[in-house]
Structures are given as structure tokens and as C-alpha cells.
Length: 611
Image 1: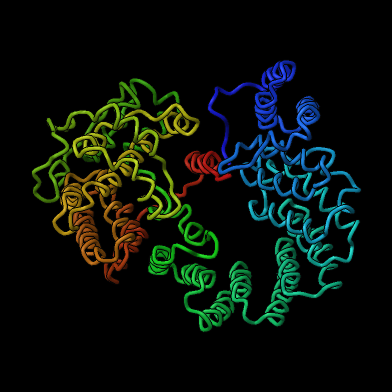
Image 2 (image 1 turned 180 degrees about the vertical axis):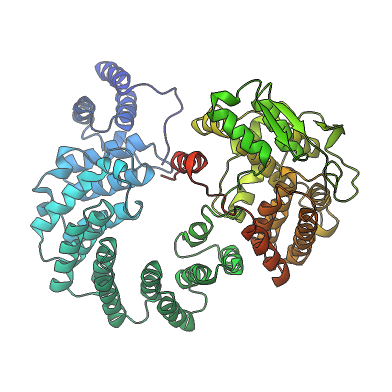
């Protein structure tokens, strides 16, 4: 189903005016096209339905003017639905409206009188009505956010009317319960599902009842219903996974794993059980190996029965697994103070015991012009020197002043990274996939982005980052540029590839935010390619050991972040994992900070929440 037609978008009123002109001229195809455009923009506008009726009257019912074909325009689909209902075929019309809801659930496609008429369900086969309700449920989150429920209430009215017309139909009652649950009517969902299993006991009915109880927080009743579903159909392993997930949600992990092990004993490759098992095991011990194994399973089984969110759920808001860690250090703290306190504006000063990462110095100087920086001393080991020799230095120093050695990237590279860069991702493989948009940039552009990050985009997120924490935007650019490096010359074998060589040089260059970004790219490579895991784990272990050694002599602002990167690394040895834990425990550990920065993350999640 497509969003629109080739011509420029018009308002619904403009579309209707053109439709009437076409009708007056007897040009029914053009009239139909404009009516479809009006319905796509204002699906409940009375004038649109009046004009549709005129087109139908002039065109022998009008169905021939609104044909369905591959990627049909949504306005055509909706117009045809209303004409089918007018022609005495409302079930077909409802199915098309449900398809439109699947295309865009934010539009009130079904909010018209014939859908909510109390007498409609009496003309419909209750099984077909149940099918329509299940079709709608299949495209909705559970639950639907409160602010997004209004366009879906016509379907709930249809469900109420259908239940009143067919009060003993088990399948209809269960499907109606599923819809009510998603729309926040949990008590109604329990009532309908309970009636359904009383009148027609079934596995599916018990599952619907269990879900309704679970949404109400009534775990004991939910588990009882799901266990009855297993008794009715012991071979449906999805119910085992549901029971395990319900137990896991209330912290009963041992019982949950017993249920999931029962499912896996029957079928070790059943996707629902595998996803749930890895999620529960990660919840129990926090070992990233479970998530890596789940990512491997997803890669090797692209045809799962349905989309799963377990990996994304486990990675969400976790350092480097699901988001960039906010920068640490005195310079960044000074930046955050300057942006919230007028007293730290132009002319303010910050005193550093030693030099901080060059990206931090450059970011703060750009964001707070006139800030006076006093560096007391350059501590040893000298932070201006790369940790290992390199032929590709990114920075040059004049005393304590730092400047890039590379030219700025092209305008195309800057524009592309501004479109892609963001501070969070579903999981590392998803970040790699998203960065494919940088695959055609040349190496000079990708490296230039690291030291010449473009300004944030003029979006709501960009404005928040620019105003509240510019350092986070710079880190986003660096992370995505390094992910872009992973897509550079992918035909080359890993061990001798340019992408590996360049990322290693960045990892061992001057201690900087770029170190973190490059190491994250290497960790991501290990997530997506098991063959490179020993190599990456070795590099991560060596880099963390080096940071820990330096930290005994001077502060390492990126140290805790490197530790979190280590814990996200597939196949990391136990000694390095223990060292990472010590580094995290020895510093303010959590990047999920309260206060203003925590509110920034919350706002970002609201801006980027999936529909």
C-alpha cells in the first residue's frame, strides 16, 4: 500500500473541489482519484463521503473506479471499502479498512457510521468479524500508547456490537478481548475472554484470557489460564514461552527457565523458545554471551515465525549495547554547567589537572566561545602521544592546544552522517545495518568526520543535543563514522583489510572519544561475524589493560566507557571481564544519570519511539 500519488499533495478540501469539477465534466476516473486523495487526508470528512457517493452513483456503483493492485494507494483502498459496504459486502469492506490501519494506525480509517452501527454485526458471520479484529490486533502494539488509541476506537465499538449480537461465540469473544486489551480496556478484556472459555473452551481462548489477566497484573490467574492452554495442546511450544516470559517478568527466573527448557527439549530451534531462553538467561546473570548467541540465531534463522523484540529489549539503554555512553571528564562537566548556568558563559574558566581527550577540548571550545582553559600540567603518560605508533595521526599539538591534521569531509559526507547519526540503536547488529548508508563514502571522508563533526541537524533531536549536550552529538558522529568504516571495502578478508587496519590505528591513537568509537566498531564486527571474535576480543583486552595501566598514573576519562565496551565484547576472557568490572566499580559507573542528562535520554526515546 502506498502513501500517495505522484502529484503534489493537496488538502482534502482542494481534492474535493477538483473531484466536483471532474464530476461536472463527466470525467469519472479523475473524480475518483481526487476523492481517494481526500479520503487519504481526511478519512472521516462528511463531504468526502458525500462526493464518493456521487461518484458511485454516476459510475454504476463505483467499484470499477477504485481497483486494487500491487501497492494500491491507501485512499483507493479506503474508498473501495466504503463502496463494498454500500453494495452489501461489509465484511470485505472491513477487511480493507483493517488493511489501511495496518498501513497507518494513526489515521481514523474506520471512524464512520456504518462501521459502528449496532446492527452491522447481525449481518456478518461472527467468525469473519473475529478475523477482522485479529487482523487489526496483528498490527497494534500491546498496549497501544494512550495518545494513539482514539483512531482505533471504531474497531472497539464494532467489537462491542459484535459481542452483543453473538454473546456465545468463543472465537469472537477472544478476538474482541485481544483488541480491548490493546486499547487499555483490560477489565472488559477479562470479561469477554472469561465468557469465551466458559462457552467454548479452547487453547486459544485460554491464551487470550491469560494475556488479559497478565495485562491486569493478575499473574496467578494468568499462569493458571496459560497452563490450561498447555493441557489442551501440549505441542504448542509458543505457550510454554508465554508462561516462561510471564514468570520472568515477575522475577521467577528459575521456574521460567524450567518451562523454556521443556520447550527446547521438544524443539531446540523453535524461535519463540530460543529468543525467550536467551533473554531470561541474560536477565539472570547479565552475561552478554546470551545476547550474542541470540544475535547468531537471528542471523542464521531469518525466517522466524514472527518478529521478536527480546534482543532489543535486553540491549535497550545499556552502555554500548543500545546507546552511546555520555562522555566523562572535567571538560564535559564544564560544558554542561556552562549550558545551564549563565555564570559559566563567555569569560568563564575551567582548570584541568592534566590534558583531556582532544575531542573533548575541541567540542567545549566550539560550544562555549571564550571559555578560558588552564591546564596545570601534562601528566605522564603524555596524553598527546598515541598509545602505539601510527602513520595516521588525527591530531597535532602546539603545547596544550590541539587541532586536526585532516581536512574537513565533503558536504555529501556531512549531510549523510547528519541523517544517520543518533545516540541509540536496537542492538549492535542493527547499528551495523543502519550504517550501510555510509558505505559509499571514501576513507578520507570517514576520517574527516571524526575530527570535523558537522553541526547537528535541524530536527527536534538535533536542537536538543545542540542546546543541552553538544558532546553527545559529536560522539554520535564519531560512532557512526566508525561504523561506516566497517562497510569500507568489505570484499577484503578481515585479517588484511583496510577497515581492520584503520580501526586498529584509531583504537591505539591518542586517547580520545575516537578510541571508544573505533573500539565499538570492532566490537560490532565481532557481533556480526563469529570468525573475527578472537581477534577483536584480544584487541579489546589489550586496550583495556593499557587504559588500566595508565589510570594508575593519571585520570583516563574514557576508561569506564572502555570497560563497558569490554563487557559488550563477544568471547571476552574472564580476567578482562573482571578488570572491566573493577574499573566500572571504581568510578561513577552508570551513564544513565538522573537530572538533566537523564531527561535528555528520555526525550530522545520519545522522539524516536517506533509507531
